[in-house]
Image (tube, rainbow, N blue to C red):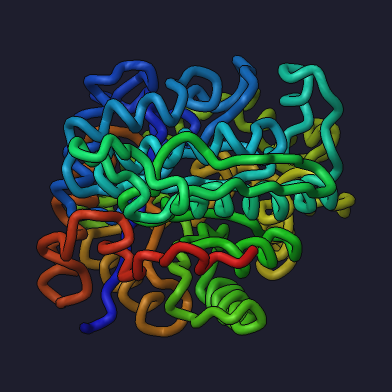
Length: 434
């Protein structure tokens, strides 16, 4: 089968642009489930592989609106599964502020409810202010990834505690569950002690799909060992191609093939019927940006108070924070490479929180995505619309048909599960060895 582009939708109810909700006609809430259903229907109309919902475990009124006010991801996606039929449903859950047993049970449940469309975005939770909501200290970067390595292994082990045919439900003999086909996990590790088994049978996909977005060395190692899909932060083709090749090269040490993991760089499309129309939209969006909000986000991402620096000066030499390694490394590299000022980085952050912004006609955007896909920089893309619904509908209705006409993107779903969409086999019991 010809290799084709994969698309994920990064769903934020007020859009990925920090002021997207102010665009005329834009959705202005991430708590209105009717609006979320409309977004889900558009993504499924566009034959997207999955909807991916990030999460945040603290509230800051100065931050992005969708970070501060949002529905809990698993609850929202379980409800959304009832108004969709094919699209994958990816929710974020923290390995630092969660527990493996509850996580395994929740995502197995979503996989059953959605008939095989669940995905877990396993994150370590970068921002230290989260700790105050859980009454604990925030682990440093290396410890967070050590915890995550064990956490993911325990979750996958729990999913493997049940054989596919363990549920017998024989009315004649009275045997409901075959005890020989259900096993405890008996995990004893440095961070977790989990007996198991989890109290839900093996899920339709065998195991839900695992998503990750690690950019640091420990994050990439974890993704290479455990992830099915990886989201990347990039700003240009050369950087993306280098990152793509480097990540794929790591898979062999874990007995995996390059095609076993789908790499989706994130980007914010601003689509117009002409280049001028697209740039007018972006200019309108940028005109809504609040200095306070953009500086708050920039400071959070760099892990230091950026208001102390001259916006029209060079990007300062700062120590890499114990938070957003991917963002910091990508943005500093871009600044050095292109001789950008701090204001340039500030504007990029305001536009798409540091992700790649692709602004232009539908044809130009399709050409760019095709070039990246065919020349070793991506297996597809994580689409981050600046606002909903029209900022996303423009991509679905104008860009997607061009890629379909070129034979680069599906016109119908190949199957019913997320693993079907991604071309992944259903793992056998015991295939995950930790």
